[in-house]
Length: 165
Image (tube, rainbow, N blue to C red; front, side, top):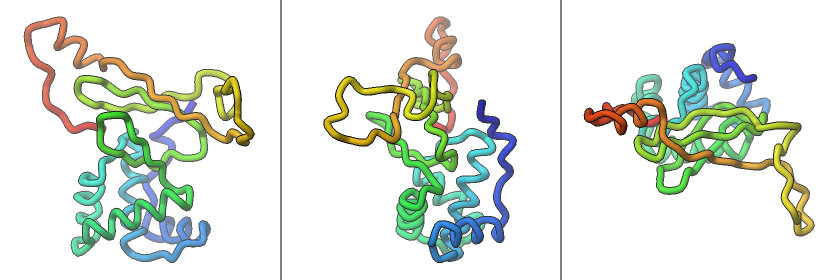
C-alpha cells in the first residue's frame, strides 16, 4: 500500500535532477512546480492549478500562471505528474505516478483521495474488448460522499467549507 508520508518533498536539487532524468530542462519554474507537487503528495493532496500557482509563488514569486500551466503540461507528459479530471470538477494534479492507483471523489465537497488498485497487477481492470489497443492503465473514479459530508447530511449542520484536495 502507498504511504504518502514515506515520500519526502524534493529539494530544488532533487527536483532538477529528476527533471533532467526525464529529458527536461531543469528550469526554476519547473523545479518549483515539481516541489509543490511533491509536498502535496506527502499530504495526499490533489491540487487544482490555482493551488499550484499559489504554492509555486511562495517558492518563486515571479512565476506566471501561464508558466505553471506549461510546467504542469511538461511534467505530465514526462511522467513526473498525473492529471486527473473528475467529471464536473476542475483538473487536479498529483505527483503520485506510475502505480496505477485510483481515486475516491466526494460528490458534495469534491474531496479527492487515493485508493490503491482493487486487485491484481496493472491495469487492474480488463476491458471486454481492447479494439486492438495495448492497454497500459485503467483510470477509475469512485464517487460517493466523504465521512464529513455524510455526517453533515445526517445531522442539521452543513458540512464545513474546506479546500478541495
